[in-house]
Image (cartoon, rainbow, N blue to C red; front, side, top):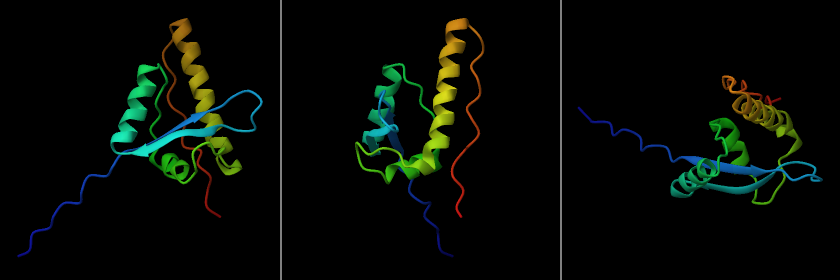
Length: 110
């Protein structure tokens, strides 16, 4: 009888986006796996930035280079996340309950 070794734990990945007025789309400003991903997430939380977990979206964004704008195929998904963040900020200011995260709006494969 052979023993099966459990698969190694999957390394966490993280991508940080930034959008500045006048730019066509948000850009990747930080990305990493493992310890670097943990540092990106910790820095975001320390700075009061909400962290949204979407393995599929992060996987797509990890393929982009640093300082690269997100591709048009991801505009909708990112726009829904940004709208969600604006709703969170409004809810916090008014004392209302925080809204649920958006349903996945990832682009569908042709």
